[in-house]
Figure 1 (tube, rainbow, N blue to C red):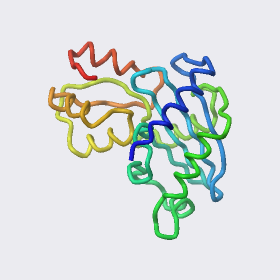
Figure 2: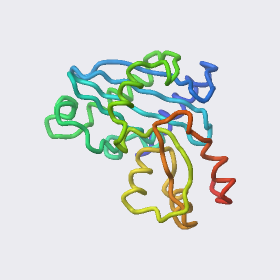
Figure 3: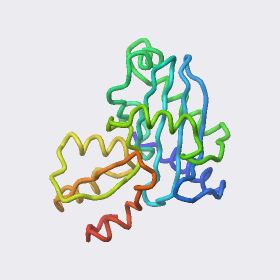
Figure 4: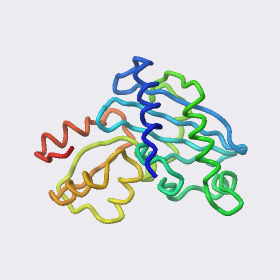
Length: 201
């Protein structure tokens, strides 16, 4: 079930912060069952805002981006999450309902801090730790002329704020999406699609 109110709340908090440069973001930090939850959000590309979470417990770290427009525990893509973290956040029935309900509540009620990706120690350490892992690529890099596999299609839907309809248009045009963990390589997704002649809503 789509929960667009979460996206609206995040955009409002981001816009109120007047913190809209490419490297800036808002951050929410809290603890859930002895797991440190760090949520980052920015609307640098207003058409396709970026959201990512970093989960840390003991010596385990995990980062993933997620689709705020499709904010539901059944739809989030926690691929290859370390078991020490997963075991702490899952419910007794092996679901993540309580975890996401708490995140939803915190997004609505808690205050975010203004920060930048480059100055955030947790973000930078986790990016380095996950340097060669695909889950550590929270930013859009470029559109490449290549077949978008069904597996990559699924990952992009769960990790970026792109609808299935628009992903299908990109796929049918013969392109795929490349992501990056390097902020300096980040591009405006909407502009990149226009430059490639891919017209989507």
